[in-house]
Length: 372
Length: 268
Image 1 (tube, rainbow over the protein chains, first blue to last red):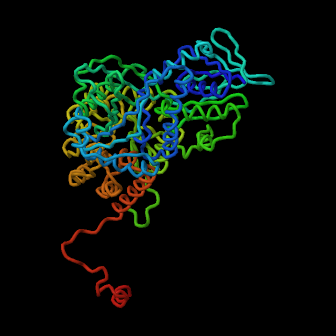
Image 2: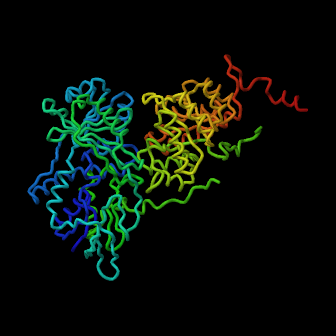
Image 3: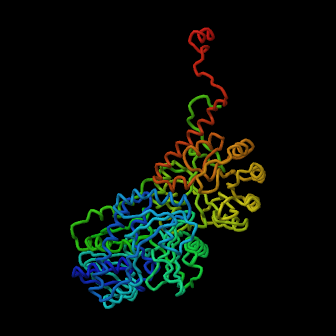
């Protein structure tokens, strides 16, 4: 069995690792592996603090996938000899004002139903645990099981491990199976035969494959170096709502902080000044000490968003499977997405969770009415 | 004059007739799918979209969704702080969406998000002179509303309360004054928190209500959209029906003079 994976973002790479673990031969095609959304992502593994109203199907997927991370990280270390930068530090969600606190606490019932542990803190209690927090906060929630991984470390380990299986070329066409085997054609003119093809190309559509209902949702994200004398500035991943705008600060092992992230649909591929200003202003409101940081990097990438924010994992034809549209949750959902995609590729008995992730759920309803 | 149960009562605005008097906004929804459910539940026929925040072309965007639903897109200049930026943003919208409609927002500061009256008036004057149908988001100031009316906007859209606060209509008297003097439709814009706020706006005589956060940020957005649709309809009907005057002392609804006996005497 030979699977060609088109797209070496975190979904393609982790699925390749999953298939490889099951004894399947893999080839991965990508002109620039792990350079898209995975390169920008902060890597919060935060099913509890990601919960919002009206996305119930996504909540269970996030919780299931987060639970798979310790095992995935362990297997990657065992197979490659390298350990991804995975940190099991807790997450603290700050409410800047009373209305923010109310909005946060109203979601507690949803978290409890999913069995996600949480703890409600007064502002003063939160500041005892994170003394760098601003004095004027209204309260906080702590999620002990919301962790983080540095996606760059994870993808770099897998890119290196699969180096000999990686074709660093753009796929220009997926050739249909017809009577024989399917194949992909690369920009360099190579034709690679396969038994199965997996498409995880984000917003890039490959000719010969169906158009997916995706839109570009840009995220701006900053990486800050914290001066040695202030380290560690924070020990929790600190998230917050400031005037209802979400902001997060993720502390890395080296003392640096990842600060994100905007959600823009304005079509601007470059870093947005407004987004960067707002992120810094909101982050400063929660953790004033970030004003002493140095700006190491600022980057914007497009996330592939689906209409309902849940991914598409579906078989398109007898030789073609798609795993795409992971939107803001690509890193968190990678272990579960990889398993579900591998099951589809290998014709394993279908997982009931996959049924809800099919492309058919977006079949468009008829126009409600036409205005003259 | 309607004497029976209201059947057809379209809103006439900027050359179109609309059955729905609920104008929706798009900001704050957790997903496009949830937004779509809410828009359908609201029955809206016009929805406003921030032209600075959403690219008009490309992918399964919010504009593509509105087109599929048959909902008219009303581009807005949210996020503009000067008349110049608002005018240029309106022109961008006209080019991208091929519409003369623009909901004009010129914000004074990021904390209140209240309109800057001077920049607003200046932008409205320019845009009207360039052929735009200007839906002017304004403070609940009857004097400014009158000036906007005079300069030729096609709708006056006073804030009930600052955007996103959900505080309802803070000064019903001012809204009523604006309604009573306006020569164009008045649409209550911003501040709606729950259904009774929307009903009150219509009872005060507004021709329509615009809201976003109250629905998109509700726990169950489609259900709140249904509540808003019903509230707007109820408030409109109550306005047309004519409410009873308020009195200090009780007045029995079934007075002795109203018995069949005396009525029979009257209708002989």
